[in-house]
Image (cartoon, rainbow, N blue to C red; front, side, top):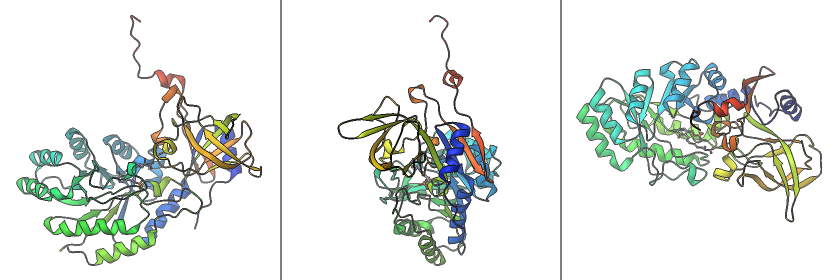
Length: 405
Ligand code: LLP
């Protein structure tokens, strides 16, 4: 069943009830995306870990758990949030990068799965724990992939993972400490349209797999693309599932292997909406600026990655189409869209950003001392507040006032 987008009327109702700017998430859309994955991969032994860096609201984590999906974390705090949301440690994966060893120790003490991404931490882990705690290794396969360079993580200049050409050093550490390596991991980027990128990754791993004696799983990371624009394509999940099955039906290992994926955007991008309101219209010689009550403090993707987010004027959906430049209220050039065709905009109209679930609220900040927005979950046909917007006290919360000033 294809879950429909929330309607203009529903979004206006939420905006009126909770105010703007407002993040709204549609729970059933998350389940829909997860079901698509499960169905596509139903003939293979595949487990999904939701990459929760995309959106960590505790209610989202609980919902993810309720639909039977596991969780992938990129910091120890995400792992703690996952535990707090009720995940069993065995359902939590911590794919680390560039972290201090004490975080790995903490993760080990929590009993969660760990992917280690440096020779240095592998060595420290070996010294301390030897064969007692099975771990995974994050490798850098030297594959260029992903929507743009900022979100490419597997190429030969990327900081992520242990470069695959250092395999002998990896094996030396494993042998020295008799390490128990149960998982090999790669993640080559975000917004990977081309299924063959995953196939290439599998080929790289298949070549080195026989060197590891105790593997149980191969982790191919996340990065499935979702459509942001009209006419955009998403990763062909069914084709990917076919190719994965084909490859793993004939894998060069002497034991059965599970395949792991870590989808973030695919799970939560389309469930999310950022509802904003127009503060001011400003005519200029080349364009009309519509200045909204938000900025890159709430949704940084357009400015940081030149990412495209569909924007609709839900207050005037039949208004004449005009060209607008949508800007924020931050004291920077925080342009969400240049010269975009949108139904005629009036001050106070609601403008909605689509695909705002992944890396939206999660990358927000208090820049310019503005508040982070509230978050709302639409579930069982009702809107529920799942985070209050900031208050003035939040801006002062961790600050110390020096008595002599
Ligand atoms: N696994 C690992 C190890 C990752 O580093 C990431 C994303 C994922 C899984 C999930 O990737 P996804 O399925 O969401 O593409 N903030 C950027 C995306 C950065 C992704 C970083 N790592 C954006 O808004 O486009």
